[in-house]
Amino acid sequence: MKMSEFIGKEIVNIFDGARLGTVNETDLIIDAATGSVESIVLPNKQNVFSLRLKSSPIIIPWEAVRKIGSQLIVIDLEFNRAKHNET
Image 1: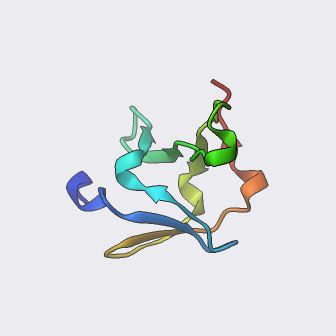
Image 2 (image 1 turned 90 degrees about the vertical axis):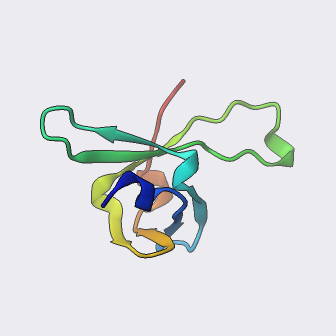
């Protein structure tokens, strides 16, 4: 899949039905040796109540990706299993 085809797809967690973001808001961590995608990094969205708090990004392991469709990327990830990057 080309990166241009990946951009714009919404990421949805099948575990709880949450819409986590879209690929244009994300970064990918790629293994330099193999060229394979290791994880997807999503900025943690802030809401009205947390505007003053800095949120750490959510790191989704590539193994959690279940399906890449024409408009969606479906992942299966229990939220407390997601890695949070402390920045």
